[in-house]
Length: 338
Ligand code: F1P
Figure (cartoon, rainbow, N blue to C red):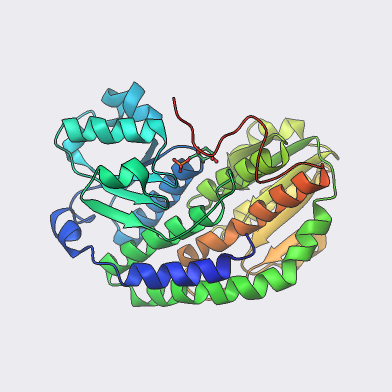
């Protein structure tokens, strides 16, 4: 987790040197919607990538878990799989559900892009490959999530010809290095708290980051955590909130006012709150029990990966605090094969 500034820097350099022109000429995301597919963390990454493509290219992109294609293909592909360019994401390249989707697509003559770190069978299954040189031994996905996300954002911004976005991505490792120096110890200290309920809130492109934050807490610390669209939290879930609840808010810049209100409301109900935000208003400085202020200039979407690191740290430190091995969660294996 703490090596991510270096890993991001190298990954962005590598992606810059890759040539996707043949694939993009055939499957331009502005003409054919890209459908991002994965399981677990890779599904959340798929959602983050879809939001990024949709916004950067002003064209719709989608995301589904691999299982949904296998179990409910008519829901995913009401007009046939040919209507999409699928992007299959898998750190291991070995997850059964993803490989079965690869077979399903190939049987229908549908080409796809594979995004992976290890490569394995997935890399062999297609002509179009984005393989990152990220070696991650932990069962839990951390830098593989952020680097695959950054790479896909890099591709979308390149297609869009969005130079300021590309520049902002290139600057991101430097910002993370700075932020880790400021906040890693704060997160470690905060992780000493024990909570009965944990809810992580985010909206828009930050919703997948809320999902991934909650999953990191669950995997690395064997603590149940939930995720919600921020404003949805008022519609029922807030009934569980009390002094033993942690509510984490991933606050956007564009909708800060509405999202902040929810977080402050939960504080009033007695919850402990933590917030990740680009620039904190004074009221949040006072209310937050843990505040991560990013202060990263440039387009909002380009700092998406920087929002997840704190959840990765929180899960790991909480796991260590509980005497667990955060790299090897109970009941979980590095690859789900069935
Ligand atoms: C996806 C995944 C991970 C999860 C666990 C099992 O793997 O579901 O998200 O944390 O490690 O595998 P992959 O298809 O990206 O290799």
